[in-house]
Image (tube, rainbow, N blue to C red; front, side, top):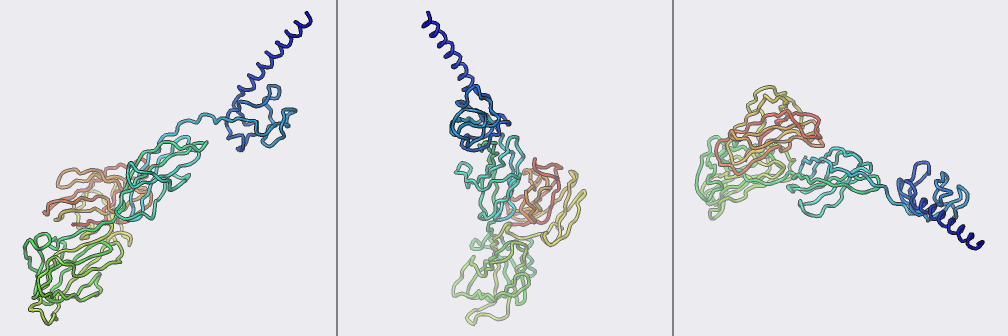
Length: 431
């Protein structure tokens, strides 16, 4: 009977011990009163699953680095904890916007998302479905990606980071940096060529060329870009011409050749600032001794830059409604016009195969509706995370070489990260 009694007591004790162990293994979530810190135990907050006996749980004096053993409070263990991270609320994908501000920079901005206590990570790729490399870690809501190649479209993803370092989802946005080269025909009306005749033929670029044999006659081209090339004809009866850029004499070009050569590069200038310039060609009396005449042909031009082509300031456009004039050296031609009124419009008539509208981009810029020849072509967004002047806002090419009308109408609207609705019309570039 005594043996049976002892066995019964042993069973009761074991049952009680197991129940105690069960409570210990199902320990509650760690609380701030434990003084828990990051270290070998894991990250606070977390769940402790195989630690302290029931007698000493919870123990306010538990800290990492104490001696091994579960004795009195304050004399605890190291390395016996198994900490599981507490569930973290899902992070949304930040609403993100991207805008090119130059030939080498793109600005990004995004809306804050709940739970992104670890900030944000910015990723970039050169294709939508390609590999995205992390390029920045930031706690702000904007980032400018510099050092990019001109004329390339870049793709971006921005992800929020939670309390345990996990990154949330992202949406893909893209922007193409500025920079390209275009050919411009000398027959466009913006080319000042008083007294020059027009010769036609399939050998000329665009089917025609400007030509003269009169000494002293000049042709002036208001181009925009950081490089320009004059294309013309060379032959036995061709003469010499002086070339000026921005009124500064650069070179005398001899267009004589023993046989006729069409559509040849006769003069090039590189290293210019990416802004409006003028190219002037003046027929000279002197000529090559082997030449039988003084004919000079101006066939076409090649322009390279952020918005290459023949530059025309906004003053040539017709404004209706309220537009505020602004002046300053940062604007093309030193002036621009700005409006937020939905009843305002800016109309620009041009003749050519394409046109680019230049304006100021920035955080307070809004949206505008764009119409070409009476048809709405889309919405132009002037927002950018950093202010950039005389930027391409809207561009179209491949048009028939005839008369066209471009109309810009402020919409009184902006993107989600914008702070204003202003629409800036600085200049136009014709191709």
